Amino acid sequence: MGACLSSGGGVEVTEHDKALHRAAEKELREAKAKMAAQVKVLLLGSGDSGKSTILKQMRLIHKVPFSSQEIESYRQLVWDNITRGLKTLLEAMEEMELKVSSEANLAHYSLIQESPIQDIHDGEDFPMTYYEPLKALWEDENVQKAWERGNEAALPENLAYFFHPTTLSRLFEPTYRPIDQDIIHARARTIGITETTFTLREHEMLMVDVGGQKSERRKWIHCFQDVTSILFLVSLSGYDQCLVEDRDAVCDFFSFPFLLRRVPALFLCFRDITHAVFPEPNARRNDNMGLDMSFSVV
Image (tube, rainbow, N blue to C red):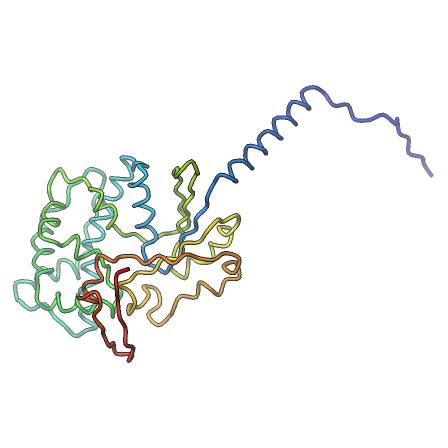
């Protein structure tokens, strides 16, 4: 058997230890004060509902500048949007049993649909060999018919903006640099989580943009911690459109128990393109589901 001996003395605390303790307490107080002043807004919505667009608009409104590298990334994203966006439209034409309406456009069709899309690199101009094919295909009668049926294929809504004649010609200028509207209309699937911070009325606003596709939703859980409010975005023009990742699915955001702890604010987006769906503010329209719908601007 043995015995345990103890000196009975306490642990000696040095002045250095005390200084570290005071510094840690100060950091905790500052962190709590910052959290109390911070408004954390979580952006939710299905894919292409406008979450990233709202985030970019907030940066522009509150003068949070885009870096040179971000602007260059958006320039390359615009190229990706117009080429692969038109390619998606041409693929949808096959399902709609539509073909380009002129012989001249068959060669253009092959360039976009059957050949690999040429990538561009930092500082590289948009290839002029694509300008006439893109312009001619967009103006093709049957391509426009497919575009009008875009709700059947989840087509990118920004094509109408980028393929406007004056916009498209501007994109192919050697000195092209994305303007604010180009950046707002540029679309990229949100992978993971994006946070943007700006100051509003002496409060720090933290807006969190999360991926809207179903494959990204499992990454949301930790975003609900300490959230002040939830902004749920819905595209007004997408009431009859299928989701990009699941044509038959409906949004299941409210199946998450975390949402029961916060009352979400509903934000209706893209009012500028609803005229294509509802030409008159109070026009009533019967869709193929037998719903009698009305639209009014409040």
